[in-house]
Image (cartoon, rainbow, N blue to C red; front, top):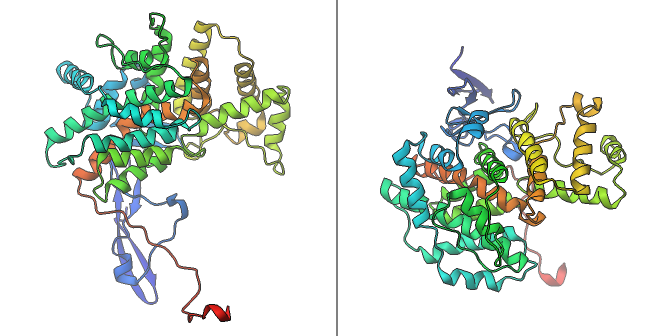
Length: 427
């Protein structure tokens, strides 16, 4: 197999090396292209452009494979805790008992948020979108932790990671309780990471909060499945912002803003909004499946298909089972969830969707679970961010420790050529 590609342009030949990854993915290294031939590449959306070398996540969309540091997502979701997976993503290996215990204790010790942060939350109206609130609060942490992280110090890096892993769930829970007019809950020292998240989010001021095992297991799986997904929009944003040597909190805040969009993390919110619209229209799922198949109809079936996966989303297989278990355990009677089940059932046997491999994806099932837990629709993307946090941290850490250069894409200019200034009286 050739280890180079030769490109010829205007009688200039340039040899470009071919880089091959550990899973036999190959890429042409074009770093010398501009200097040698005065050419750049044009790739809108970067669909065919590798922006970095990474050891964190492997994704094969054609085969439906997702692995973290070499571990299959199916095995991690079945056997690991979210904090184990977070440690794996960030530090490269699964932790032993001592490492995990220390990680848990250090995160718990950093779970207190400065009381002044509550003043910032109070300044937001209840109607403010939780993602905007979360991005603002995450960025505001910089003001309460002004010293920059010394990326050459493993100790400094570890402390910063424990700090954000401890504080971020608090910000998530406070953001939700703000929208519901509930008092802030600080969790409990004797609870683990997932249990504390549940208590801080769902506890009522006048009753003792009881941990539901099936809900905890489903939430653990959801967070694991969302923990990283290669160089998606928000992850690429975290890396490119961090490449300017912006701090960890500022880079994460940028990632949250990128995740907000309906084509990215906001997709699970869009799923429930679509299901609610179908309910208000009378609940005829066949009608909306036909609308989705009509190329002249602007209606889009949210939660089906995936930009990367050309097969069944491997995360959807896992979370479908968890969704079924949670719904059965909670015994919820909800017409919107009934519509979701009907859409899933009918689409999976419809040749139009099957032939095009438009299967329900992770956003479809995660939205169903979040609704069954009583999480407001506008909080769905915030829950996505909670799961994606360790992946963003891992990517930021890898980029900074690898001394990657500042991100600076090029462009092809298509505007006017040189022209003279016209006095305002003659325009």
